[in-house]
Amino acid sequence: MTAPTTAPPVPAAGVGYRQLWAADPGAWRAAGAAWRSGIGLVGRRADELAADAAALRRGWVGPAAGAADARLTGVRSELATVVPALVEVDQVLDGFAVRLGAAKARLEAAVTLADRNGVLVDRHGRASADPARPATERAGPAVAGVATAVRAALDLATAADREAAGRLAGLAAAARSTWVSPPPAGRPTPGTGPALVRAWWAGLTPAQRRWLVAYEPELVGSLDGVPVAARDQANRLLLATRREDLLAEHRRLRERIPPGPVELAGLQRVDGSLAGLDALAERLTATEGPRAYLLGLGTGGEGRAVVALGDPDRSERVLTYVPGMTAGLDDVPGELDRAGRVLARCGALAPGEESAAVLWLDYDAPDFLHEAAGSRQATDAGPALHRFQEGLRATHDGPPARQTVLGHSYGSLVVGATARDHGLAADALVFVGSPGVGVAHAAELGVPPGQVWASTAPDDVIRLVRSPDELLRHPLLAAPPLGAAVSLVGGSRDELWFGRDPADPGFGGRTFTSGRHGHTGYWEADNPALDGMARVVLGR
View 1 (tube, one colour):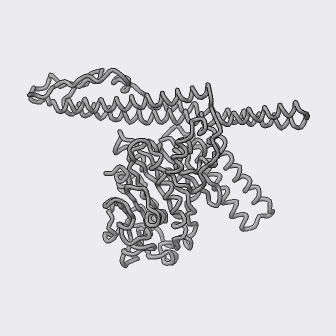
View 2: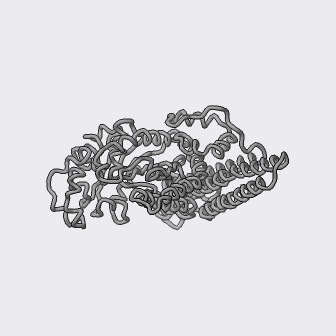
View 3: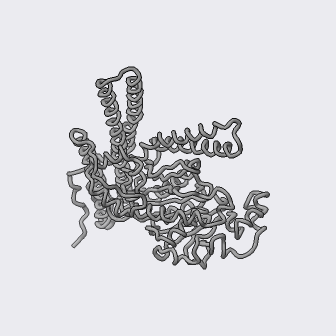
């Protein structure tokens, strides 16, 4: 029996070949952004109502005045429930655009495969052998392979279309009936296991979940085990409050005239946090690049933030990036850019697959070398990082994602100590520029064999010193650049600040190459380490 030279036609139901080829994911993202832009209008109207209510109280008293004031307050409260809905529409449309883009990438790959194998694809998506080729070159298996690839792309687009349409229809129906409804008594307490949180959330109605997002955003935004979309909606509601907290602290510090050294240092810290928060807010409304999801935000101390690029609940591969010393709210834009560079390289290497990257800065990172000399801040971070990774597992839709946790510098100790003391829901661990990870061997980290990776640049100061005290005395600090002084330091590289070097062969892990980019250059475009990190995330 000879192999067929024409594949069966693609089923007509769902998204068609011509539709997918002509589809514009960017237009859907723009539509989502347009809905999201309504948040500003709602906020301004709510502020106007508050001002009107205040003016009313000053000039009108009595039962009628009280009733009018209550009504204005109620309308303002109702407006608060509109904001999460606008964010949710944006989430739905952006998610559809992402999956549509993945489907288009798969379709383009199928067409490339067809061109390479002499297979024709007609405007209905049917694959057939090129009759102009000799019969001996009309490979049936190639036709079948192209047809399967085309069908997979169209199936993905169809599933995405149906899901988005269903979610939007559900929102429209809720708006016409019961939009919000108070949930029953009982809430998970901070530190509750993500699996229990997920079960609690799943037991609520959509209207009850919307009520919690609107009226208890502090709770919803902080609970690992609540789906990413809801946490993003809740935390966006808190942005203005967090900014006002910083402004209030700024005013308090300026009350002393002239300000002393403590106040001046505090003002500098607050100014940095305000700049970082404003840059983060701008990134949250950006229309370029992957959509950002705000999963956590705090302004105490140096500030904290957990931000995802792409939706971790829907992506097939998820990276969690833990930064190191001095990281704070003022550093969030730069650290998020690093996570984004890995994600972009993943997209270039695997254009038809969905990936997400999370910046996890939910710990008190050391500010000075004398703090970095100890492991206390790393061990203190362990329970929170453990819960966060468990939360990603609990809320993920469909088959489990491949989860990778990446630690840089002191952040690698945070990752290692968490894996050692609490366990990490991770399929791979990556350490770059590491001062040691708190264990002597990769087997102590509890991830699958062969899935502990490390890289240290030849001119990274971490590999040149054995302790923070030695770093303080090292001539590199007085005579940069680092690369010129590599030959000044000898000795074994086996032991670093916090145990055996994870990039040392005796550690039992695997390594990838880094160019000479110093301690902070692992994400540079021309550094092979960037490819290395992306390939680990992809499982390659």
